[in-house]
Image (cartoon, rainbow, N blue to C red):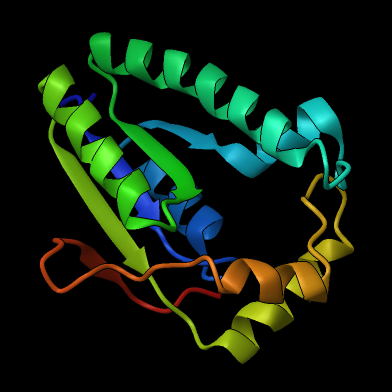
Length: 159
């Protein structure tokens, strides 16, 4: 088993985060925490928009208790979440520092047209979070790419 380390994936919807997370999970090996999978397992593929923030917060809290325990046991963790805002990335940096664990951000980018095509294609798959085109566009406005002062490892294009 590798050293305890946090591998956090930064990218928007359809950028290939989960594909990369699954590959990293096997290669390290490590333990993968994919928030969309937990959301679907607990609340279904298309939870009500008004309850989504509450459900998402619960999932993130539950996952954190598990990934922190994995780190305590010496297991590398892969956080397949997106970390769309600078504030969320800064919070994770602070958490990693408090835990005394190294943190690597893996940055995934893909043109919007391709990302939306991927999202539409996976909408038809069982066990995936449904994302309507309008939701994609609304969420896109909330996405903050990494700043020039932030350190991340660029990941090549994934299919």
